[in-house]
Image 1 (cartoon, rainbow, N blue to C red):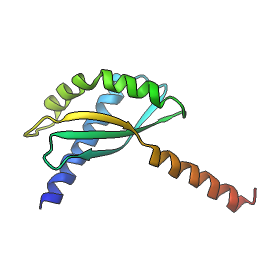
Image 2 (image 1 turned 135 degrees about the vertical axis):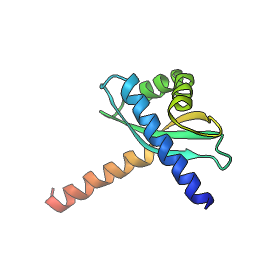
Image 3 (image 1 turned 180 degrees about the horizontal axis):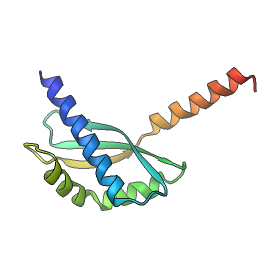
Length: 112
């Protein structure tokens, strides 16, 4: 049961954060929310993201960190949660590595 609650909160926050970014950020670079990690007590959330094109992650991290208080207000308005969590942001290097490995596999399959 506790897992279901965590998964529901994670899913809800992922959608709300993605909507906030879609409304507040411009489309260059494209920001993708890849995961949301919710602490056990629901008071801290870490948002993992990537960008297209590569190399813009540090600029986006600065932007998101600057907008964190506005995001908390947005979450409060758009999500019915007992606690409005503190939100941190991290670049999703794991997703970047996965994408790179997919490219390598495709090249190997093509015989390049």
